[in-house]
Image (tube, rainbow, N blue to C red):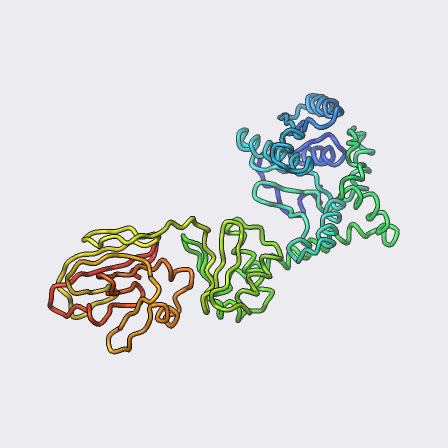
Length: 437
């Protein structure tokens, strides 16, 4: 039983739900879990999912039911119509079968109070997975192979070979069923199993074991790199996405940078494909300010030394609105206006002479003369201020008639600047979840 606990996956008091198809691997796992349950102080139940794909599935369910009843193992059975679900989802049968099966396992575990779900992936499955990732061009992430644990899901058999499985079942006279789909060459994994691995076995009978060992070592290295990457400076997670200080992040070795970017994408529920990672790295290292990269549900924009990854939003057209005392919503901004006496220290707010003003977006030809500075176009001032290009068209402009009185993030035009001790219009522009802008 030692190999099943080499990852320290099961603790006393756990309730383990074992996924049982009736095949050799799952029967081996179920028997080995039952062998160690008393000594390990945990409980075991079985779960079988009928995919509704093959006629033989009825017989497999009957086999599992009979075996569990004979050995007094609690059994939970689920049924699905994989072909119909695959057609509805526009997915392949194999992908849909896996999704429905795991949904059943998780639902059953939570409903019945199981703390762990165990599946019978063995060293051969690990070798197949690593090789498939390798030929698809995977990085270190994929070469780690199948993980021993992901949340409540455990795979205790990753260092157990198929030969060990068959030897155990033969010695213990444990019956099992054969799934004929495992021999179907239409599935890539089956071709890997029946054509590629036998050739590797001819070269080295320990090939599968060595590949599984290599994956385990890579997992250890990857865990260290993940920890180091998590500590890399320059990445700030906020309620509106992620902000990256480019110079800080790029000061780190590229492998850590790429791993940190992968962590960022994963945190946004985006699969960290090599295409996205290379795109983000190129955006930071080579692209000009204003460049962007579209991601699923997000957009990454470079603004000088800053990279912002924000959700894609449907932007509504902003129309001019009168600026009154109180809060005025303005796209993703909130504008607070009040009448007050202008203080000596004006702080972050905009202080304007009394008058009627409107809020509007920037228009072509808008100019602004900041105190003691020459008149410049608002566009040029925004560029000099390094305001991100995607913010410029929607930045609140305070105007009176055709003249610009003030612009958020830039300041107040000299002609409209309130004097200390005099009545004034105080304006604070706040972006969502940020301080005054």
